[in-house]
Image (tube, rainbow, N blue to C red):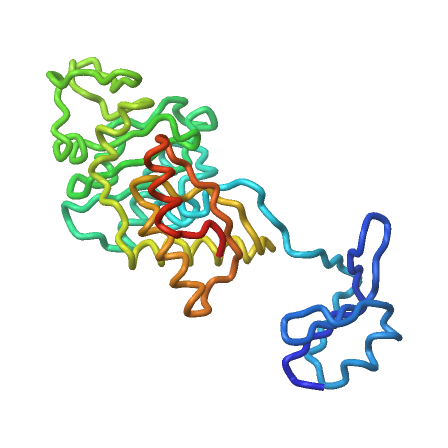
Length: 278
C-alpha cells in the first residue's frame, strides 16, 4: 500500500439518502473503497488513518451560482459583516489600516455593514464618521446589499465630488445639512467613487482568486459555477485562473457563467478560444 493513501473510519460516510458507510479509503486522491470498519481497515495498514468519532462525512459541495472573484476581493478588504454598531465599523476599519499599513493617499475599501443592525445609531456612516478612521487614506465601504456605499472626505476630494457636481441618472449622492456631499452614494452614483479603485492586475487577480479558493475549500466547497468574466476583463481573469491550474495551486474547480452585455462582446469572446471551465 502506498503512503499517499488516507483512511477515514468510525464515521458516518454519506452514500445516498438514508444510507451511510463507516469507513472510506482514498488512494492518490481517488475514492478506492467504502464499507464497514471491518471491511476497509485491513486494506489500509499503511494509510494515514483518521478516526471520525462518529461524525458525518459528505462529498465536496458544489455552489451552483456565485461570484468567486468578488469573494476574494471582499476577503482582502475591510471585513464589516456582522458589525453591530457605528463604532465597530470605525474600529474594524482602523484595525485594518493599522495591520496592513497602506501608503498615505491610497484607497482602502471594505464591505458588509448594515446600519439596520446598529445598536448605537441606526443610520448610514457618513464622511464625518469615516474621517475618524483616516484623513490620509480614501476610505470606501460598501453596504452589505451592494447598492449603497459610504466614503470619507479624502475620497470625495480625490473623486472631485462637490456640492456643484451634477447628480447621475439612476443614482444619487446625498447632501448634508451644510449643503455639501456627506459621503453617502446610492446605486449608479456609486460609480462616481468606485472609479477611484484601480482594476486588479494579473498578480493581484491571482491573489484574489487563490484567496477565494482557499476560503471555499475551508468550507467544503470543491466546485463552483461563478460569474467573474465580462467583456472588459475576461482575458485577465481567465489567464489568472488558468495560471493557478497550471502551477497546481488551484483548489477549486471553476466553471464560468460569463456576463456579456452585447452580442459583439460575446462573439469576440467565443472567437478568442477561451474556455469557461478550469
